[in-house]
Image (cartoon, rainbow, N blue to C red; front, side, top):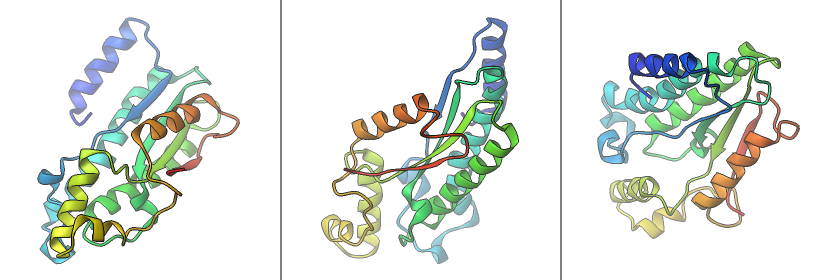
Amino acid sequence: ALDERELADYCASLGNRGVRIDFLLNAIGPRVDVARYGRPCEELRLKDFLLPAEVVAGSQFLTASRCRPLMRGNRSSVIVLLTASLGRSAIPLIADRTAACDAVQGFARVLAAEIGPPGPRVVCARVDAIPGTRTIQETMAANARTMRMSVGEFATTLPGQGTAPLTLQQAGREIADIAFDPDMWPTGSLVDIVGR
């Protein structure tokens, strides 16, 4: 998803075989240890700050823009751009990832306007933290260490949108609903996926 040439070649091979894309979802992000989450802004180097933007926002841009020609003429197709609830929060020690989330949301708005209603729908799914995933567990541990708290104590400082922690299965079901319900989620929608 980050190799522009490889992605272009892959899309060309699909196009040559007459394959069309109905649903596009890209869920990659940097590993916590590589991104070195859990550090205050003054300790971040510019390349550290830009890494999540490159991996998260950059890969969303590449996959959506390069796969889009394989979705032309298919009004039922949908591009779901995935971002995190950080785009509506102010959680310390994760400025780099939060900026990347805001970038994805901005890109989703522009792409929806650029493609317009005749093309594939563009929907941005803003997903709450899923405590059962390795990425969230590692991020919370890194932030808790920096703040000299236990992970449990740190968890109580986080804003929660849902009544229960979000699960991977629930997030998957809701993203599938977005894909198959164009009336509920028209192009340009921003959907918050929270625990219930």
